[in-house]
Amino acid sequence: MHAYRLFADGPRLVADQPVPEPREGEILVKIAGAGACHSDLHVIDATAADTSFFTPPFTLGHENTGWVAAVGPGVRNVPIGEAVAIYCAWGCGRCRACAVSAENYCEAQQLLLGGGLGRDGGMATHMIVPAARYLVPLGELEPRDAAPLTDAGLTPYHAIKRAAPLLVPGATAVVIGVGGLGHMALQILRATSAVRVIAVDLSPAKLDAARALGADATVLADGDALARAREALRGRAADAVFDFVGAQSTIDLGRKLVRADGEFAIVGLAGGVMPYAQGKIAWGARVSTPFYGSIAELREVIALAARGDLRAHVTRFPLERIGEAYAALHDGTLDGRAVITPNG
Ligand code: NAD
Ligand code: ZN
Ligand code: ZN
Image (cartoon, rainbow, N blue to C red; front, side, top):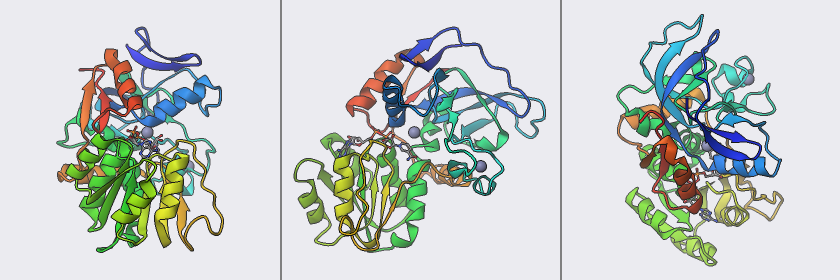
């Protein structure tokens, strides 16, 4: 089969990757869609610099949907042909966190592995999923366009749910970076709360899209971003700030915007450092670095999408044009998410 694999010297499309056979407990999924996430660019860069957590080679693509193609021995109640979302953080399955389906916070693994992150992922016609619990039925959702729900939807959903006690009517949330994750965050805030939402981005086109998705105010992240954001906040501080960039400039912006006893969730992995000390952020503000979400939360995200309250803006690319998808992601010119469709 064709697969887009990351090697020590960079990623490339290969034509001769064998279609894997599902072993005991495993499921073979025919891929419908594999979203291109900015984390892939971080992993590709880290691999080139020899600082990656993950050992190449492996097939990229951790944001996947597809159809069950075959099941290994011992797998029951997984119908062949069923359209499924694939949960991407594969834990030990036995620890306290995994027992409540929060495999994203597995206690037994220092380093989380998943398909597309250390193990073979979805940028191929087929992939192996190691256990049936990672499959969530998609119902009537279009499988290709649903792929971003598994990360670009799940990760902000989890961050927003953790901040839910603060997100009351009259409160304000700031969303920094309204790309793949951020454009889903805006919709999730709209669908699950009555807060005022302020969107921040470098790109005027992304801010236009953010207004169309219900942002009440937008702020261009240039040199005046702090003053403009304070204006948009009408002189108050934000109840919650969600940073979907994680660069030094966005962390420094976010920590200055959040109110005392508020929440600052740093989701982006761009390598900025939060100076966590008295005086660097309002008193009592909680700083967190949420990572994906639980399997139960993926079901909630899919339910939100099934209601019509959450929909990724998707541009589809065939596997042969994957280079264009990553170039557009890198350049910030996508509307929403690029989804690779290896089976057309
Ligand atoms: P993306 O490229 O689709 O979106 C990023 C957005 O941020 C773009 O709209 C871009 O214009 C904007 N941006 C970039 N620099 C900015 C700045 N300095 N100020 C304001 N806006 C800026 O990326 P994505 O796929 O949505 O991923 C976002 C980040 O989240 C990445 O760092 C990714 O690795 C990370 N991520 C984290 C998790 C997690 O579990 N913690 C999961 C998925 C992705
Ligand atoms: Zn991702
Ligand atoms: Zn575990």
